[in-house]
Image (cartoon, rainbow, N blue to C red; front, side, top):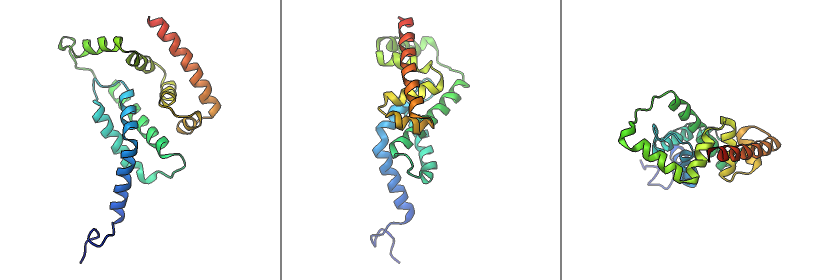
Length: 175
């Protein structure tokens, strides 16, 4: 009896896995970006977050119906995973010691880096505002964000404008 590989055919599970791996390759940079956007590294490393996202993508891959773009779907799964990890992290006590240098160095680095400061300000926003502004900053259109957040284009546009103004006020207050 010939194996499916030796006769040139692939089983359905091999095709499914190959399609999934191709999808991961196409979206790996975006997944990393979403994971790095959420400032929970004191408890979760980016690689661990990515693994959680991949697990959730694998679990839901068969349910993806193509009603949105693959990129939008992956972003939504990654964002929901990160929001779940953030909630979980909020319940987990931080055990870093200030005298170990890690926390102090991270604070010093964050104040020197505008991108880190923006990330910290976004982390202070209500969850819905943070999700929308992150998607906007990641280059998604209002239409894509509306689909991802189950909202309207007008509501997204208004939320982006209000959130930009709020971030500006927060930045000015922190200076």
